[in-house]
Length: 375
Image (cartoon, rainbow, N blue to C red; front, side):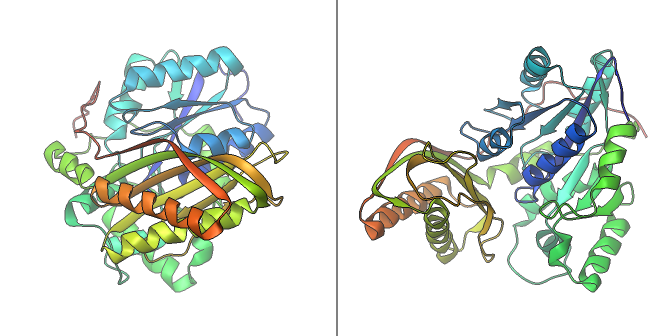
């Protein structure tokens, strides 16, 4: 238990797109609050208009958002966000959620915080979450669609630098599948502790959370990384963020609207052979007293998952769409625009007006600091 700590503790929870970081961080933030500690969250993305920020705020947590680049390339923005949270709520614990396509976080974020700003922060070991089916496919344990070699390179590098690898969504695995995945991770990424749990159900997380609160990160040799290959892998990913104003003449189910829209987008991308890394949406409405509707899809051949539900019917709201896929960004925009039109047409009295949409490929990573430690 950390009491009256003179320095804030910085916890970074990484993992590839769709691993369940946002759900896990929500659970961690509640755990921290239940232990009498103040918490602040920092969300991060290549662009603005984040589903994650909306989800964190709906859960009542103070949150700052860093857009336009990852923590490593926006290091000074990370410090400004931490200072902003400190001024507002004086958190004992700051939890950062980096961009899901980012790696080399230990050398470019954790080590600089420790070496340059050690008088302000203590740092926990980097945790990297994995979606078990995605991970099993990349490690060759399960058949099915996956990413190209350059994108898989970024995925594996995230695991290589982890202090702890958290196999998330274990409720979806048989014991045999879980044991095989854990054994494969231990063979290939021996530097990391392997833990298992389910962020959605809240199972098996307490040991991980206790380690984050109490155990400081060890200083290990800096991971070797081919930045050219890393940049090429990130550049294969298409990015789309979209904000839509929704209104209707008659009340409708926000959950049903999001699920219909998500299935339409996924079907269009799957028919074109594109692999979805993560598609997530929220709908907040002034007609609802609290909460929001949130749906998520983590693979092209998976089923949408309703993460948060609005039980009451609504007549208006703001819809946020975040889509990341190994696909051409223009194709993502086309799929979203066609799906919005099809959804509005099928429902008749629901109007979907795009307020903001941007689609792009991530730029080449250029970290502010990179602290290297020799073997």
